[in-house]
Length: 491
Image 1 (cartoon, helix red, strand yellow):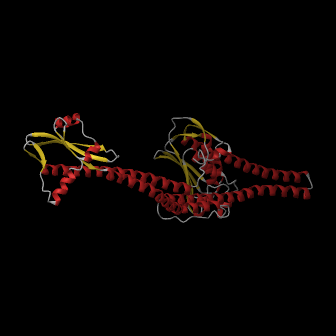
Image 2 (cartoon, rainbow, N blue to C red):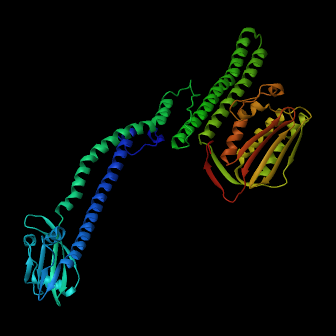
């Protein structure tokens, strides 16, 4: 894996900061909303004014029927010129007015309608044939706009063609003027939104900046740093909780690494110091070949111990980095347990320890036989080592909820509770009471945990001081498929 492949990188790094991009998003969003509102309002006003003009034309058409009446064989305006209201109404009706016979010959046409242009005989005949009123728009000579209502008009037994118009130029300009004013005001509003959005984005991102500043100050000396949650339960609170959880894990791992470094240096320095001391003493005090032979033999024993430590460290490092390949085959765990118990019977007999196996079920599982044997060996070795003479060690195997459950229990001195969370760490050993009796490498239980996890299982420990200790390993059952795979510790 190359160094660059360890990081998930976006396709391209944005040139603008998150605060700026959030502000631009606010402005863009409000710009789209304001544009939609302006266009919708303009369209709505146009429809409203058009409907209002039609209602006015309806009123004019009904008013026309009250003043344009048949007299003998012709139509006349029947009103009292001395009556101001009637005179004003008739004058208004006749401003844009056209009256023709069925053939399209003009009977009466106002100057206002003349500016629009008289209707063609074809238009007159078509409207009269339909017998319906029609509303159309007409443009005058000077560009002004009129809304015209035309239709048949019956009086005195005859049918005429009548058209009245209403100027709507000023009315139609209102939506456009409103839109122009809105277009001028919109940039000012967007500028105000940009300023408010800038401060709002800064306020919203302030917890994130706290996380950034905290991450910048993280070092080996201040891994206890935590950020106070906001209490809102939103995504920023989740980020803060994730950050605090990460810091807790880093602190725990860092402390474990420090302990590992101290313990490893101590474990390696002890045999080296012993070897050097023995050889120096031999060089200064030895008087015969036998003296030299004893010194060299003792030094070789410490060299062998040092080699076991280095080899165990190397194997555990290979296991945790996924360099050990598991050759998983269907195996009877009861058979594996029985074989390992038989190997430890002579050692247990020398210490007068009762070693028993309780395995009523075969427990078929897909496992690496060599690693499972190593797991049982490490647990049995610990149990016998720390159990007093005349004690008892039991290996129990059963099936439970789809798992094979392997328990190695002893009635030894037990482990104090404050040691239990660290019992599977490298080089961690309980250094009190009777548990100082044996000298081990301190990596056996770390291997047990890796082997269990590599098989998709778990390992737990239960212990009471003065009553004994029980290690419980759970391995998923099932042996249908045989496979070889590389597995690291972090499964």
